Length: 116
Image (cartoon, rainbow, N blue to C red; front, side):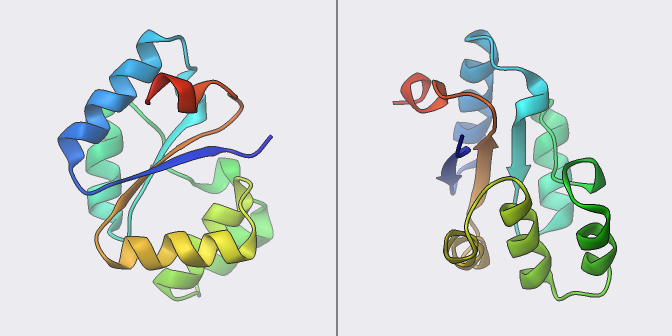
């Protein structure tokens, strides 16, 4: 199942949407936040009790490889590890270059309907 993804320019709206997902019973382990700035990603994820895409979600070889990759390569790799194609990962990485934050929900086919 392809993950649900939504882009945000406003952190407060993202926080509200994460609350909605949790109220609907979405498992915390399936909710991820990703942005171009590691500090921003950690800050948002911490404030909404969501996850970041780390070694647990990634193939060990890719996780180690990311230590030596550019930021863009690292973000694309993370997106591919959670289920997006290379082309999709490239498009989302470009959006993060513009300051957008991504909310990703795995293992739930109803996430989109909860946030529309």
